[in-house]
Length: 140
Image (tube, rainbow, N blue to C red; front, top):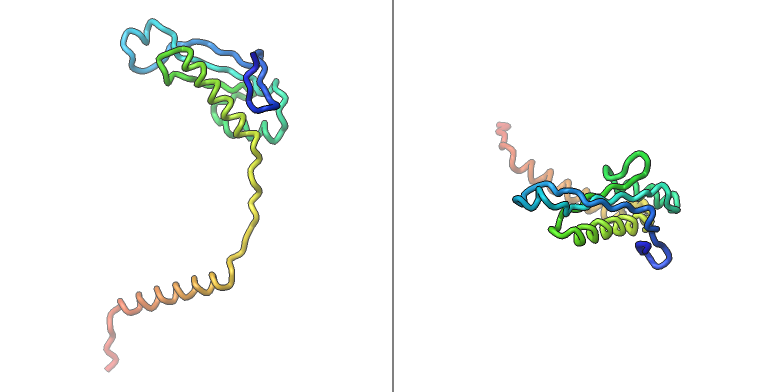
C-alpha cells in the first residue's frame, strides 16, 4: 500500500525499505534481546520529484541522505516496533511535504526617510549622553 504524502502524491512501497534493528541506549536486558528500533531507507533518486523539490529535500534531509540519494531515518523513540515504524514513516512524509513548499521570495526593502531620521536622532542623543558622562575640564 503506497504511503500518501498529499492528495495527488504517494510514495510507492518498493522505494521504502524498513528494517528492524536493535536500539541503543538504556533498556536493561530487553534492549539486548529485542529489535525494536527501525531503520527506514527511502530511495529519493528513483522517485519522480520536481528538481527544485528534490534539492530542498536534500537540504532538509541533511546528513541523513547519502550520495546516491538514499534517505536513512533511524527511529527508536518508542518501545514498540510498530510505533517506531509509524514514527519513521511520519518523519519521512513530513520532510517530503516540507520540500514541496516553495519558499516565498524575499523582496528587498529600503528604510523610510522618517526611520532614518529617527535612527540619527537616537544616535545623537546617545552621543550627548556619553559626552555628559565625561570629565569636566577646567579651562581657567
